[in-house]
Length: 231
Image 1 (cartoon, rainbow, N blue to C red):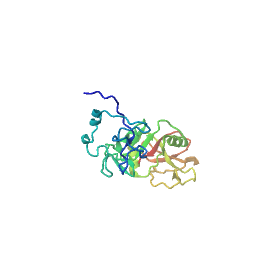
Image 2 (cartoon, helix red, strand yellow):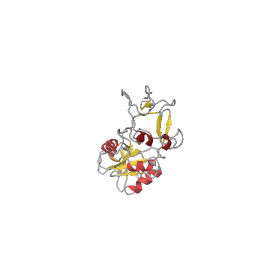
Image 3 (cartoon, helix red, strand yellow):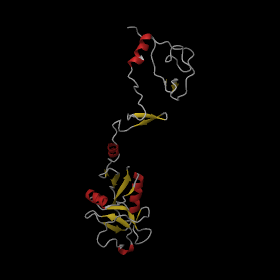
């Protein structure tokens, strides 16, 4: 076997244009081929590169599968071509969004809801309500906004401590609203609550024992639950 005198290098050039003309990755056509050797010319080279006949034979088109490495647009493969751009199909690559989501919600104190739509964070430190909100925002979410019986029951089963949630009547006494100022779509007040005891309870907690809600002074130190939407 003859040892090739030249090494072969892949270039960012090929027959990429619909016309069959060769081009580089920018899709700009080359000026011309070297005579008789379309693949033997380096861009900007003054003279053609001679290919060893045996090395050239190894890359014969007869040995290649039809359309190998070039999925047809819309064929459901891992990549399709549309308008000259590559479109990846995560399913064809074996990508499971729910698995990736779970991987994003595994830090200490984090947990997913049953539908894997929200990531929650249970705070490990007792702080005031406003500090709890700032910590949630730094984490990338907000104090949890409990908007259904299902979500409330889910958190009751999960938590064993009293926590701040995203509700208060700090703006207008007696009108408990969510963080954006909208009326609460769901509530689970304990009997006789909210009572604004001693006219100083404006922020809402979810109690550990019963899961019911109560109002407390916003400066009280409690743990908290943050929520971040994941899709």
